[in-house]
Amino acid sequence: MPTPLPRTLASPGRRRFLAGLGSLSLAIGLGLRPADVGANLAPERLRRSMQALYGQKGLASLDAWFALLERLRPADLSTRLREVNDFFNRRIRWLDDIAIWGQEDYWATPLETLGRGQGDCEDFSIAKYITLKELGVPGDELRMIYVKARIGRSSITQAHMVLGYYESPAADPLVLDNLQPSITRGSLRDDLDPLFSFNSSGLWAGGSTQSRADPVARLSRWRRAINRMQEQGFI
Image (cartoon, rainbow, N blue to C red; front, side, top):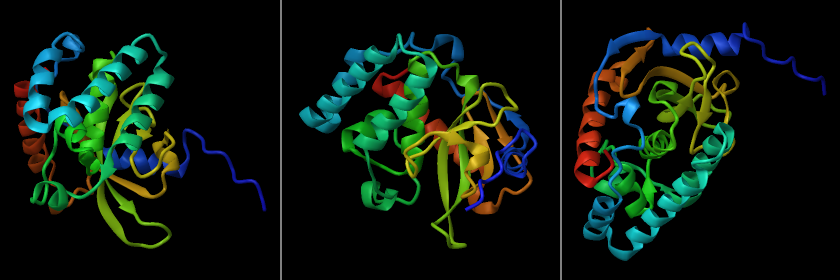
């Protein structure tokens, strides 16, 4: 079998992935200030919230999350990305929102995801995003990326969300995904077609967004999730 040609910065895969993400379309202020990362976590309030919502089983999951934070604070960036990705991929069982919450599109907080031990792709991405911010990764280097994901070798696609880590705003992001255990560059994920991305500071949208992937509708769900995080003790 011939050896595949290596990807380069000018490769079609990289151009396709970055073009799908577009440019900054909207500057937003959705709490979670980068300067305050790790400064506003309220562990005892989180424990009270978890106890009230999910009891001792939920508290055990929360304590495992606290232990992860403590263990990874001195770690290098690569280790933090890998361990956080693995933690949620191993601990959380994928189910869709109808099965978990009885509604079509509910964006859970990390506490809700840990408490249930279940989540869909948005819940995985949000939990990883918040965890990495608590570990000191600047929010401007993280974006949740809404994509169309192709299933296997077929042409069938489904809506999906992953978390991207960007060394710079125009970088080819590292993709943290619950469908694929290893962290890879976006340009190597030929199964993903990006539609838009966002974080707590802004929204990046390309020209291929469709009505079912309306960024503004998604941001309203993000705002509601942030409001619940504030109530529960995350920020």
